[in-house]
Length: 118
Ligand code: FES
Image (cartoon, rainbow, N blue to C red):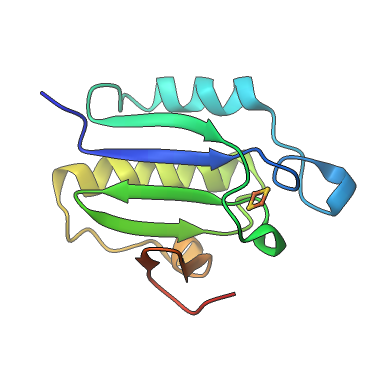
């Protein structure tokens, strides 16, 4: 069965680096969190170069069943964990609501999304 979607954690010029004010991202920790979430075979996870909205670092882009979702300031392991939990729920039930902490960080950018542009 093909993956249903993609999760791109930005690790470009600003995301993941404290020199520009974002929280530091430890890539192996995010990878371990993804692996532990049991999403392999349903979602693909990758790190990307700059996705564009650097002012919103740390940015994570989710593309699930043709639906783009952008998240800003995913600065803690708990927030990334909430995003993975939401992705897992949305794979099972596409209408699963965004939890409050993610809805507050959802924005629109290239290709769409939920929420205002930055
Ligand atoms: S470095 Fe992440 S959006 Fe530019």
